[in-house]
Length: 541
Image 1 (tube, helix red, strand yellow):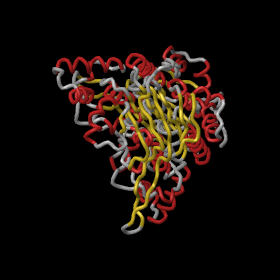
Image 2 (tube, one colour):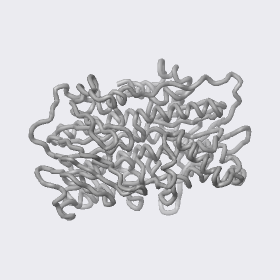
Image 3 (cartoon, helix red, strand yellow):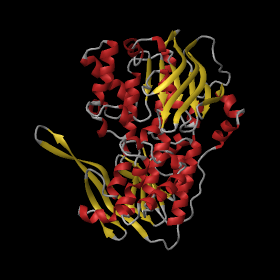
């Protein structure tokens, strides 16, 4: 695949914008009164322009985009948004629906919450095409297969009938992108479109967006915390902080000569290696021999056939060690991790030992005793956190279950201390997950797992939703917890910079198998497998 396009150094805002945002303000009602999430934000995007909004979680990027499309039912929005000369605030709901999807499309940050779990991805893409393009069901299905293929989903003829829960996180994100691009919109709002994708698919998606932008003159508003991606893709960049737009400039100018100190801090943020060497006498915590995971899929009217998502993996993990697991979406990374903790839905194969005990054949009653010693931070915090529970209840749930001897005041004290460690404070206790940004929800999920001080934590894309500065804070927190409590981590991510900073050893997976493994620095400096070389080549661009 060709190299990602770099922004034109001379790119400036043309005189005839497609969309204009003028003094946009967004206010929410909170327990302590009104909270201003977006404060007098103004910018414009020209036809065919690639514009990016960057900033830390909670800075107002996503709220700005949602307010532009009038998607915020629980907020007070003021200011003007003019699209192709029309004031969107003056449109009726039917008129606005005709604009959404057909003229302006949006890729949401969390595909599992945006996709309907009751319909296949093909039906959901097809609905957009029949509604806005007037296609027949057969035409819509054929076009949906083309779109899934364009966005990098393998076997699109089969995957078109899959439901969201049957796809990996990256595959769900690609299905969302296919749905958004179905009607060739004039403006595409892409809210973290590559968050759940590995580096090779990131390149494909950005190349695809760039190609479509050139072919049909589509404008793109990219919302991202991935600064290298923004630098390659966008022509202009706006930097947001605490609801305000602090700087706008052509991309090259902004990265080479940022004017605002906050912009400089963002650009200088990147994962730094802070982990300590493993003790020479560190005992073995986890081991797997010939590990696999078998699912049974429907075959014919009444039959079933086996599908091995993970095949013949050997793995060991010492106390205080981090093992990185990398590979493309659907390679089996998460399934392997969940199998090693006996949490996978499929049948485990092979021998798995944790803290000296064999757990692949253990009954659930036996496993329950070990659960406090193994915890998971899931990839999608929105669906991992109960919307009906407060943050105090969510983070303290494990403490209440596994440490019932603690009084409620002691439990609250432990919850507050843990929240402070992940960058939140006591004001979060009475709030609910929907009141936080994606990155803040991920920090809450980490707090919920880390509060029990487990021996082993499975970290499934724990920093994928975090901006670069908060990402480093979380990595430093994880490294500190590891040093202090000798925790071991199974670290699953598509972010190779994070793996290099955090892991002692790493394994590379493809199609359910391990293609290469070894010390992290050795694999980065001299990979032997062709697939590993391909991954690292994408990372180094």
